[in-house]
Structures are given as structure tokens and as C-alpha cells.
Amino acid sequence: MQTLRTLFAGAILAALAAGAAAQDFKNPIKIVVPFAPGGATDALARLLGPRLGKELSQTVVIENKPGASGQIGTAFVKTAAPDGSTFLLALDHSVVVVPLITPSAGYDAVRDFMPVGQVARFQWTFAVPLTSPAKTLPEFVEAVRQNPQLGNYGMPLIGGVPDIIGAAISRKAHVKMEAIAFGGSAQMMPQLIGGQLASGVTGEPEGVTMSRGGKVRILAISGGKRSALLPEVPTFEEQGFSGVNVSSFNAFFAPKGLPAPLAEKFNAALHSVLKDPEVQAKVQDMSLELAPTDLEQSAAELARSYRFWHAAKPTP
Image (tube, rainbow, N blue to C red):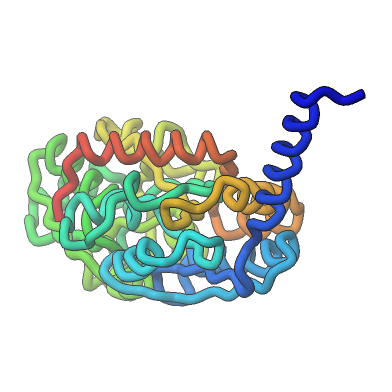
């Protein structure tokens, strides 16, 4: 005969199970990309979105909300209902760095978002036009010493890793590097290729594409080791420019307050999608390194990024 305690325990477990089952995703699920169509983050969203929809038995739509280094789309997701209807696929830059350098952004990485799964990591490249005589970073620095106007370099967003790269070159070589911010790599790269910019910093996906296409020459890459995609390109550290052992990541975020069962379901679906050999091959073709995380790892990565950039005090 069942004891009263056993009956109560069974009832509680049944109620919890029913509550978890009652929590499901809204249909359709919206994935917001805070950048214009055509970039690496947008390509990731369009690769993963339909597959996530299949895993979750929901329709997934991709919505681009570009502007202000990802600020507009990110702020939009912050104000969305935490009910499983809206997710953000963004760079750590948009979520973490932008509100540190632009308080008017109106959101905070830790306070306003729940990370629900990292997708990939990438490093940053420093490139010059093919017409540049500089074949190495030291040669480029010497050219800037001879002609300070060559110290103007392009970057696809405000602040963050590109600022750190410019500061590292200035500090080590005692030359003045002045950043010119663009509204994304798609706007910056044509001016770099055409020689209107003496140099430029961009994410590894765009850098690798332009380099392999014979359009730019990459002189250095961020991070603690050379990229498997650019094994011939030395890191900044190798060339004596310290402080550039940094990388960035793409991850999914939800508005703070998303119920734990939905976060767990989304993360499990993402893991399943990222195990697909076809997805893995396509992500590699984008010059990205797959780096999936569970919910605990996602939260730890966001906290680490927040601490790093808060200490770095990035400036626009």
C-alpha cells in the first residue's frame, strides 16, 4: 500500500512534468540577426534556422535588424517576451562590447540576456591591399613611420578587438594608428581592396575569403596560435605585438527570463544540429571554428567575455 509521502511525491513529480510539457515554443520562432544580410552571422542563421525548426517541430524565420554595430537588433530582442518566440544570433561584440562603449544602447549583457548556446569562434585579421609593398607587419609599421597617413585603418564596427589591434600596433611600434569605423565588413572591404584604406581589420571569415580570392594580403591574425585556415599567417604575438591574444564568438541569446525547460530544449536542438556533418562542413567553409556549449558553459563564456571587456574599457 502506498504511503501518503509516496502519493504526494508522485503528485509533485507529475505536476512538474506537466508544467514542463506545457511550456513549449511559440510558432513561429523568430531568430533576429543584428546585421545586414550577406555577412557571416546572417549566413549562420540561414544555415541553422531551418534545421533548428525541424528539431523543435516549429517554423523558424530569420529577421535582419541591422544598425549601430548590432545595437538595434540586440536591443529589440532585449524587449521581446521571454516566451521562446524570439532569439538573437549575434557576436559577443554586439551583446557585450557595444553597451560598454555606448551606454545609450540601453541593455546589459549579463542583466538582460540568457545565453542559450554558442555556435562558433573566430579570430581577427589585419590586412593590406595587394598593391601595398608591405609583406609583413614590421614592414607595414616601417611604412607608417615614413608616412603617418598610412596609419588610418578600417574596421567593420566600433570598438572591441579592432581597437585592441590598433592600440597594440601603436604601443609596440610608437606609431599613430587611427581607426575608421564602417557599418560592417561589406562596406569596408571594397575600400581596402581598392587601396583607399592602407590597412583594415576584419573577422577571419571575411579575411580568409578575400585572401583566398587574391584581393588582400593578411599580415597578422589575433589569438594565441595560428589559424588552421591561414597557417602561413603569423599571429600578432609571434611578431612581438602583445595584447592581441583574443578571439570572438557567435552565440544564441534569449531575453532574460526564458523558462529553463525551453532554454534546455533549444540548447539540445542546437547541439543536435551542430553534429550534422553537412552543417559542420558548411561552417568550416565559412572559415569558422565550431564551438558548441551547454547552458552552463554558455553562461561562463558570457561572464568571461564581460569581465575581459569591462577591464579593457574599450573606447569608440
